[in-house]
Length: 72
Image (cartoon, rainbow, N blue to C red):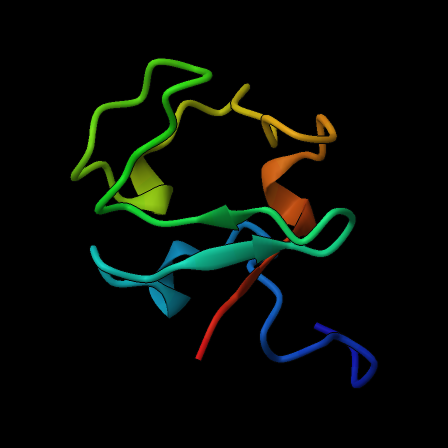
């Protein structure tokens, strides 16, 4: 990983996440909260970000999972 890599970026590294980690889209600022799930893609509440399907995308802007960053 390069020095320029933003430390809060998900970047596909599930080791940075726990089951309650909330992530924000770096494109449109949509917040994925596992407690709420994602009604648009029919993801049930309680689904951690790391368990979203590989082809899941932001319901607002179609950003990929790699476009999300971990919220403090």
